[in-house]
Length: 192
Image 1 (cartoon, rainbow, N blue to C red):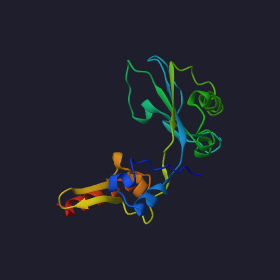
Image 2 (cartoon, rainbow, N blue to C red):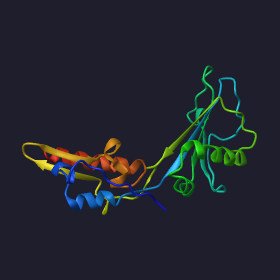
Image 3 (cartoon, rainbow, N blue to C red):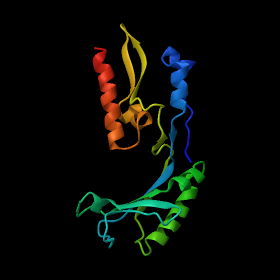
Image 4 (tube, rainbow, N blue to C red):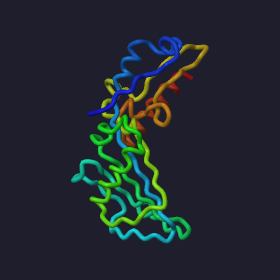
């Protein structure tokens, strides 16, 4: 399953910058959804787990857990450990429209099953991640989309990773973002 966002623009076709075909292509991009949970501990807390990060396939809610300070190989005396949890996509989609405060207890209950005896955190942050990873990118994976190109206005390229969408034009991983950035750069460079 995946989530398809509705492309919101002001007026028709984003003030003439985007054609109907481009709009349809962008609206067809689909994303997975999930929740992320951060458990933050006081500096003197010990979390005795032999691993730094773990993929969990045996739980319907929890998919990934990282002991963040171990994962980053940090040993800070005045900063406590943090446990980062990602839910599964099916769980995220099932609870997508619920308030995160209502979903957080469910995630904590499932985390207790996966990591029994985890210390009580000093604080918890639950984050709804509506657009997690691309499950269906722009057709033909072009890496970028030129929205508008004129001699006087220059080129407006959408893509190239970061705030432009990157994975929506390729695929959601490091190489997809690099591919998108390079294609966006090529188009911009050729227009100069």
